[in-house]
Length: 400
Ligand code: ATP
Image (cartoon, rainbow, N blue to C red; front, top):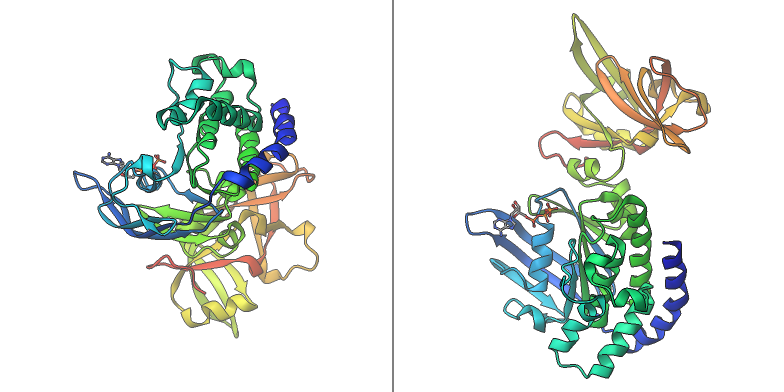
C-alpha cells in the first residue's frame, strides 16, 4: 500500500490540471425532507441541510438512523415522501438518477463481476455513448490518479483485493466527472490499516478534485478525520451540524456528546448543590448499606451555567482526557480531586486508558502512557472542570 500512496502522490499533480479544467461543482440542498417507507418506518424526519460547493460533508450516526436513505434520496434512488432536494439550484425531486450528474460509491463496491476493472470504469460512459477515445483517456487518467495499474485494469473484480476493488469503484465515479460524489460507507469492507490509508487518500482526492462530496459512515473517527462539517443523525433526525472541533468541544446534546469521542464521554447523574457560597455537583448513591457521595466543586464559567439549577437534577459530562492523574497536575484544586480505585488498565502506547471506580461510580481516564499503573491501585484523579459539560435531564440538551 505504500506503493499506492507514492503513486497517488506522483500523479495527483497531473490530475489537478485535468480536474480543474473539467470537473464542475455543486451545492446540494435538502429542504424539510422526510421519508416514510411503506409499512410506516420513518427513516428521515424533516431534514434540512445545505451542502456547499466543494464541501466534504459527512453524515454519521448509529445503524438505522437514516444516513443511507438520505444519500439514496440525493442520488435519486429513493423517492422523497415530502420536502425538496436541489442540486445546483435545480429541484430534482422528479429527476431520474442518471440525469442528476451525481456519482455514488457503495459499501459493497457494486462492481459488475463479469466485466474487467477497465470495463467497470468505462461502462457508465459507454452507456452515455461517449466516443471510445474519450472513454479510454478518462479511464486511464482516473487509473493513474488512483494508482491502478494496466495489469489490474485487465482483471475482473474477483481477481482484485478489497482495496483494489474499492479504487475501481472510486475510479468509476471519477471518470464521469460528476457535480457531486456520494460515498456510502466505502471503507467498511477494508482492514483497519487500509481504511486509514484510503481515508487519507479520499481526503486528498477531495482537495484535488474540488468537488462536493457527501460521505456516510457510522464510524465517528472517520467522520472526525474527513469532514469539513459533520452531520450527526439519530432516528432520522439531525442532532447537530458543525465542524469536527466544535462538535467535539461543544456538543449540543447528550447523544452527540456520547457518540463523538473514543473512549466516550463520562456521564454521571446528580444534582447541583450550594455549599458555603460555592456550587457543587453532587451524586448520592446507596451502595450496599452506606450512602456514598461524589462531590465536585464547580467554579469559573461553569458555575454561571448551572447557577440557576440549584437543587435540580443534571447530567454531568467529562471526557476521559480531562480526567488527570493528580501526580501530573500542578497545584490542583482539592475540590476537583476524586480518590478512585483502578479496575482496568489498557496501555495504548502513547497513552493509557484507565477504568476507575469511586464508591459506585465508574469513569474512564486517558493518561500519559509512561506511568506504570496497576489494577486495584488507589489513585487521586483531578477533574478538569474547565472542560466539563452539563445536560438537562429531561430535554438532554446541553446547559449553556
Ligand atoms: P446503516 O448504518 O445500518 O446502513 P442507516 O443509518 O444507513 O443504517 P438506513 O439504511 O437509511 O439507515 O435506514 C433507516 C431506517 O429505514 C431503518 O430503520 C431501516 O430499517 C429503514 N429502512 C431502510 N430501507 C427500508 C426499506 N426499503 N423498507 C422499509 N424500511 C427501510
